[in-house]
Amino acid sequence: MAELTPEHATDDANTLPFNERTLELEEVGPDTFLSVDLWRPKGNRGVFGGQVIGQALSAAGKTVDSPYRCNSLHCYFLAAGTNAEMIAYEVRRIRQGSSYCTRLVVAKQSGRVIFIATASFQRPEPSVLQHQYRMPAVPPPEALISREEHMRRQQQKETGVVDEDKISELSMLPVETRAVPTSADKHGLPFNAIWLRAKGDMSALGHQHHQSMLAYASDFALISTALRPFQLESRKSRYQLSMLVSLDHTIWFHEPFRADEWLLYVMESPRAAGGRGLAIGRIYNRDGVLVASTAQEGVVRGSDREPDNKTLEFTNSVAPVAKL
Image (cartoon, rainbow, N blue to C red; front, side, top):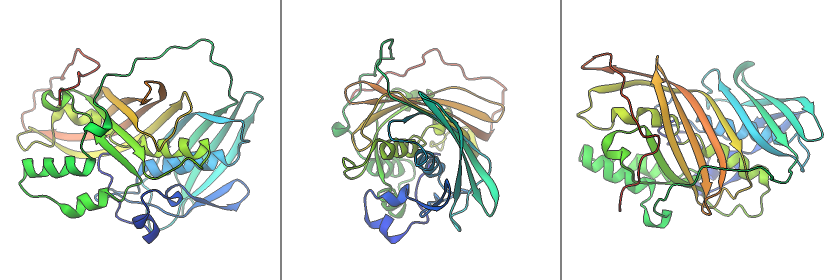
């Protein structure tokens, strides 16, 4: 989801840069858990999907023994969740094997299923056969401006008016991001890259908290990558967006990581058509290790003031990084 300003949060969530309330769950029955905090981004039909993803993984993890770590999470958004009531997560133990185990998570509000996920957990084993895509060479996060400052400059450039309330709300999110400048910014390529990390110190928390927090953050800016060729932020764009809603979300965990340390999120969209868009993501730590991969499909609907039924085509799958 593109905009992540919380419209509803508790006082604790507003005052703490990182807090467990974002992903905290209360056990209310056998393998059944209830959220304690929900955020609904301004202008959204429902609560932030990333929070539901993170809470679902947290719920599944509570039913798994400590040697196992999540290797993949596959999610489907079935209906918009409301922040007027908490979400109940029911976990079903589908399989318990010696190397892998599987959990099904069903999220409900008022008895209605709004979200489902399947989570696979693996007992760690040595890496013998391994390869990865190399991390792109990008400026370090210390050389880049914050998401808040980026939005402030963009608003000033486009409209001459800065929405300080919206920028202030961004600062309350438990994850900070910094946009990486690329040629996609000027040429409308379906590519995006950001640095991200959880706010606060998570060193005392276990791997499940770090995985759940990255699952939460992995929803940031992913599907909106499919919109970049249409340069919707420009008033000169011939296109107008009418709907952007996540349909599904998948994350694969490859290596251990710290969610409170800077991670590079590289995203690209190979296709948008038929009212849907697809985005693929890769997440690296600062040592260049690919620690996670993502994929998301969403409803992408809009209008064209100059319809010609042509498909925008691109030859490069990775956009070069712009010089600072």
